[in-house]
Image (tube, rainbow, N blue to C red):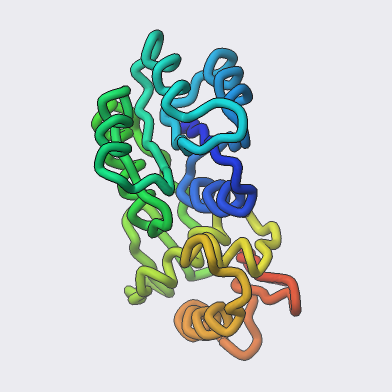
Length: 228
């Protein structure tokens, strides 16, 4: 499994990225300070680093300097610093890419894939979800029920992929919202209800009595293989 190190002192953002990376089949290690990042890089090097510049102990540019002395690991800088000189400095110091906060999760995930491809690292796919006559192939973004093609929207795929990666474990509302729509979302439960309803109409035998996409009232959702 491709390992990605995320370095940021924003706990909410770390949780959102952890869920998004896990949903896409990556192993993520999330730390909140520069020293922990340097320790992790030395002890168990990742295949990619997502790095905030504004850390509480060591400036991100210093981490870039240290890493580039010994490693060519791809580094995506994730920062609220948006001045052209900041971007140029980070790229000159060895960053492979620069994403300005606030950002779109899908854009960041696309940049992760691009950086991994350019470094020759293969990305990991989520295993297909197969239950009864329902098959969700996340690698191909293809869904079938009883052999019939189902059309799922990109948002529906994001919701299902997050739940599928959890392997039947409950995913809380705020975590699911952050995974689908990005940081800043956490209370829009009506969004989840709408998309859960749409998905159930497509994959369930009886959308009023779901057996795959299960609601835990007031808490979150889980994707199971039936019989719940």
